[in-house]
Image (cartoon, rainbow, N blue to C red):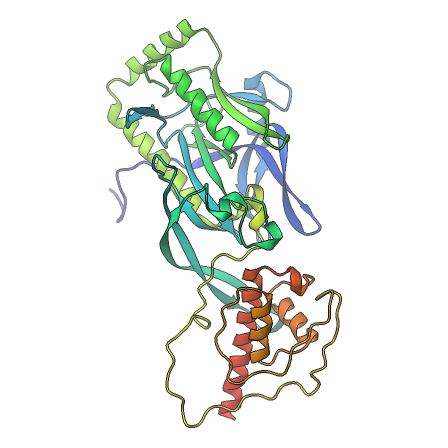
Length: 436
């Protein structure tokens, strides 16, 4: 008997992550580093800490035994679920084996994705816009973000600044913030559990192409059959990138003669001949597993900490109802009195805020909702709501978790965050003045 909302799709949960990297903490920051061997990990979610993957010692031991090494295996036995299909006359791997998309992450959230591209390499991306919320009070106020809406935008990785590095996030200028997001789903024939799958994740073009090409090359020798083949090995190798750096390149290979491979494929195919519906269910379940996993908040945080950390301290695209442009309304006869500017508008120089004194003239009247596009717009917007000293700015930055970053080093998103917070405070003060 099924509960409401259940479907016929069987969704096997992710049992393990096959990883060639890990994260570590330095100076309070979570940073990634590469490994030169395979590790088997499980997701760990601890209160007060970023979700991360930790080694499963029992599975790691069994993997080393299957690879016939004492430690640090560079190749491990796996199986795959599903077979290639012809799409437009081209052999294509199913998403149950290799799931891929272009994705951009900010602030531990997936904020833009595109899965399907045409022959010219263009597609339609889904951009996610968030709304900032706050919890707590006083010095314990914390900001968090909830999904407000999605919108479509043209996706061309060859021209998009987020993919090429030519974007407006100054701190990461020249660095690609939009990357391939690749998920390989495999079975682990050496681990005594049925009902779960293991996944390998990557943001590397080298691994994506090597995985796709190696699997399709094997399928050419088996009349298009890959599902449940024995003696497939997941291999960690290295290649030189365009800038001369060694980068991981992961592939799948069959270890044996071509004749043995074809014989094994014929045997496996015979056993699955009458189970095509079951195979389709398994494939659909694997795809749904991947989609569900990538939508989980803890998985997004773990993914960005390990793979896309360059934008972790960048806010996701924000919709702030307090700061969205609105149609102008007729002026009321009795406007709330504006609070007076600070008695001493003389700027206070603080090296932690800027290399130069922060100086603004007294606030303008009336204050307008501002679009923060650069530092000049930021300074003008603060001037309108009475923020005129470096000390005030330092306090505002601390309120939104940007203490220690100089005014000139703030990104456009961070400038908007400071201004949004300052304007909220100004509106609260105005309300108090009006009620008094």
